Image 1 (cartoon, one colour):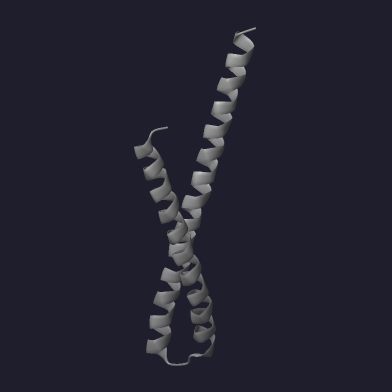
Image 2 (cartoon, helix red, strand yellow):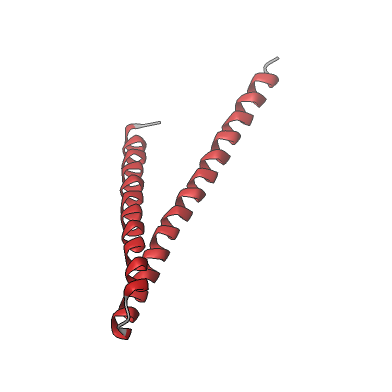
Length: 93
């Protein structure tokens, strides 16, 4: 693995960590919004809070879905590497 690809992987990892931190922050704000929805009786404020609630539900779900997809992809790559190494070790004998 060359230096450029290591830098790209490091930058992608840092970006993914930052994205997860933002998702957790939005998720915590969403909990506060849902509590405010229960306490609000004003219809205009309720409509605004419900729109914010949708955003606070969708964005973290999207980020966590990306995380799961990346975990499955990494498992696939690791299993593929494992089978290649097993195939090389058995073909040399």
